[in-house]
Length: 79
Figure (cartoon, helix red, strand yellow):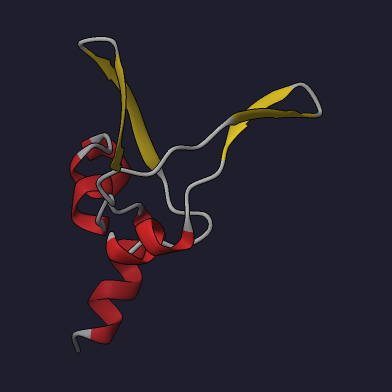
């Protein structure tokens, strides 16, 4: 087990994660983590990365409707 201290910088509370732990999890500076509290313990887990498919699935279908200009372009490229 590794022990770390909470420190403060510009009003933010900071906990440094040792490089060896970051490397063993395949993380880098800037990696997103989810923070939860379970049974009075702080648990950090790598945040799932959203794929393009995930983003598109959450987008309103009307964003995918072709306007008249798009329709004309599509018709001209298929000829």
